[in-house]
Amino acid sequence: MASDAYSEFEWREMVYEGTEGVRDVLAGEKVTCYIGFDPTASSLHVGSLLPLMALARMQRCGHTPIAIAGGGTGMIGDPSGKTQERQLLSLEQIEENVRGIRVQLEKFLDFDAPANAARIVNNADWLAKLDLMTFLRDTGKHFTVNYMLAKESVRRRLDSDDGISYTEFSYLMLQSFDYLQLFDRYGCTLQMGGSDQWGNITAGIDLIRKLRGARVHGLVMPLVTTATGVKFGKTEAGAVWLDPARTSPFRFYQFWLNTDDRDAGRYLRFFTFFTNEEVAALEDTLKTAPERREAQRALAREVTRLLHGAEAVARAERASGLLFAEEITTLNVDEVLEVFDDVPSTEMGVESFAGEGVGIADLLVKTELAASKGEATRLVKNGGVYLNNRRVTNERERVTADRAIAGQLLLVRKGQRQNHLVRIR
Image (cartoon, rainbow, N blue to C red; front, side):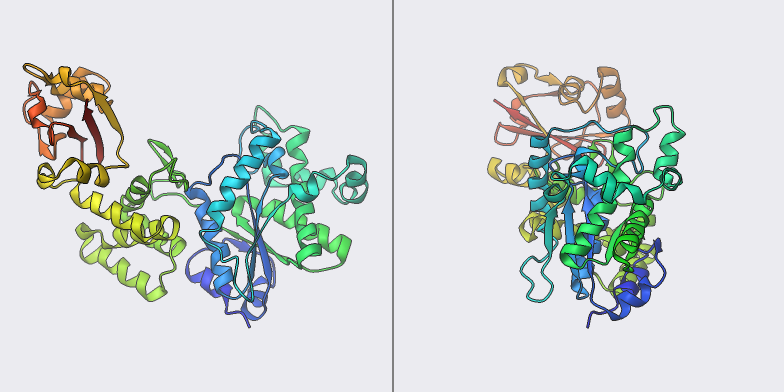
């Protein structure tokens, strides 16, 4: 007997809407469930972590998870939550993206569990084989245009300047056909996703009811935003990716470590397997000792461990510990490079540091920590520039090679978080 997944989702504030009866089903039955992942890139980003964790929680509660890597629907593009049509990708690019996503899904799901092993399927396996006339006759006739126009994802696009193409308009039918295929092939009776997927999910439920006379369910989770109203996962540097080649483990760890106090409790519920009691205890620290940031440290440590492993956590924490330590100048080159391997770097010839050396303002511009010498000067005057973790107080200061660690490395920092390595050739 599966444990009560609905209650697990409920206390974690992961329930936005569900079909009638889904609570009772998840409280007392073992089900097969699925979530689709769109292969628009070769990596998922942190915006996909909530559905990923949802599948992992379902598996831990005894249910069987299926992850769809949408190689078929990815050729069309989901209009949900989009204001304009996606750029269509080639079949080869989609296949490459699916392979990248598959590696990341395997970090969270157990594909060797004896009773409820997870499964990854590619909907291109059935969608790519469909012929138009058969699909319209057997599936399309069950969708009235009025029904499809009433769906929020379609209605929002119709109200936009760009409208919606027939290609994306058909996406709802294709996702519904996915649910039907998973019901027929694997006995899947629950589709999950973000709240923007509700229209697509209920369309699939209706199709299965009409064609198979069966009752299946849907459960959607809230779309995650920050306390400031910004879409979760977006930073000044862009998306935070799950692929370490796109977002290094160090930067990934720092993303979670920098979580706003107002978001930390929710993110602990969403993105970790900590118990209710453990989350409550960490939330207490946000009130009693916010300066210690224990909740954020626990969050960063656990999410990084889940994705990149314990060794990556250790490296990220060591790097974080040395970010502000003046003892950095006592390290050798190999130690600095090991700790700051994930920090962006710039190479400069030793001749740049000859004589009186390079001006600190020029160095900030060269490393792109400042857009101009004027901005660099203001940063120094405001106390926001550090060289080898020591604050620079003179905007006219010049840097020579003898200040570099072993004559080879300089660590330049802007503010409290933005580091840059200068490698002296």
